[in-house]
Image (cartoon, rainbow, N blue to C red; front, top):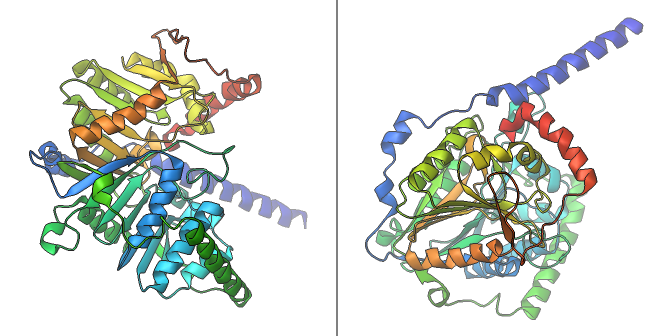
Length: 479
């Protein structure tokens, strides 16, 4: 018996070593953008000298974000695509899923793609998602569901966040699908974030469709949806779950009835998107490779190039910054060519990403050494928006954080928008956050601004960061 226990202990130990090594070692080496990609990259393709068929606007508030999603779903006539990193139970997800069920009842085809790790954690066993997944017009798939015997599958997550309706509407940004990001159901736990809404004025014109960024998003989604990494879920409920689905459908129907009754403007059959959007010259989708392994940094390569070739200024808004050596060098190269380069991110007292804040605590001096003008945000909530301004013409909005996970591990999508008016609109949104921020001096102190108070890091958090900031260096390439 003692010998058997020893064998079990050795087997468990070997399994733990295998899991740790399998999850960490395949991602240690950080790739560079390959020659094929570099040769295919055409920076002029982001620009147009005439107004295009797409129009755009910034979706800044959490209430606007939720209402825009509900309204878009009710505009659908043929197809809805929802791709997201994380869906969780809550009032906003009930709003959205009750609306999706209503659309599916109108014979609209609905495709929902969710990251496999977070889908498994937050959606499994919930009758609401089974009610959706068993509807004949709705299919839900997970991307890269982790396998306990393949530890490398725990990395390489789906980080895209967008909603696409027919060939008409695209909403893309940084928001996940639950109450922390959408609506105002829980004001004590709510994040600032940002999306961009694209409206294709040539909707219904097949010949013009390829001129819209929605066609690029459609192609990107279909390639990912049909890949070997995506598997259908919620379509085969157990007999036990089947008993709950009927009740869940009734809950969704009742929820939709109450939603439509109290917010008739959200469920109207049509909406004047031309009036609420602004003309742009062009919108272009950029993205990372979609396999689950260590990736070439396609998004970062394009962003760095565009920033380096700015004429006047670059302005980066990111929730946090966890940079590789190549990224430090790249940012320094941008500053050398464009001295007016600014970065705005969360202070560690406000930020909601514990691991990223731990890394920033240690590596903040390295960011300052690049020469970037660094501002830390001290607002009432954490900011989760990801945007970049390049001169007064290009603007980028999407899911990409300025960190190593977004650069080398995860799927990411960003829209590059050519349009001075949109650039100005986005700058106003970022400036609102900047008004609650402080400039960090080269020596790490804050420049005085009587209008902004430093929110101190608690003593307990300082103590924890002192330990974790060092510990996480062992695997910071996963942060």
